[in-house]
View 1 (cartoon, rainbow, N blue to C red):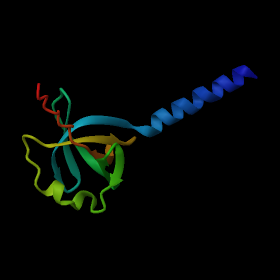
View 2 (tube, one colour):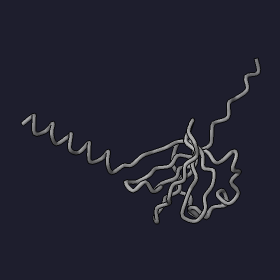
View 3 (cartoon, rainbow, N blue to C red):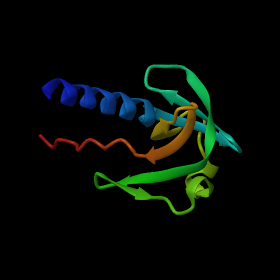
View 4 (cartoon, helix red, strand yellow):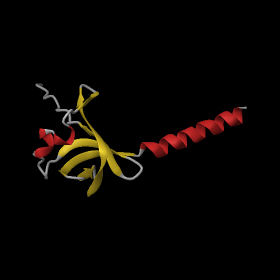
Length: 113
């Protein structure tokens, strides 16, 4: 009985791991048509294809808030190719971007001491 339960957990874990894809943190350097150029932390820039149904979110107070305009938002029209936009992307099984979460770095408070 215990062995069957253990095997069931292993199978479920493998299934979820394969379905979830990969999540990368870094910055978006460019979006054009059907591709996105992304630079992960301490890595070279890489171009990914965009999935047909991509979800775009923005972090607001530690919660994801959906961007209603999606990739057509003003934010993506004026990307500085050197600075980029801090973001996290999720790729699916076919290595296409399925989700973008825009999140800025927190500003450090100055210490007045």
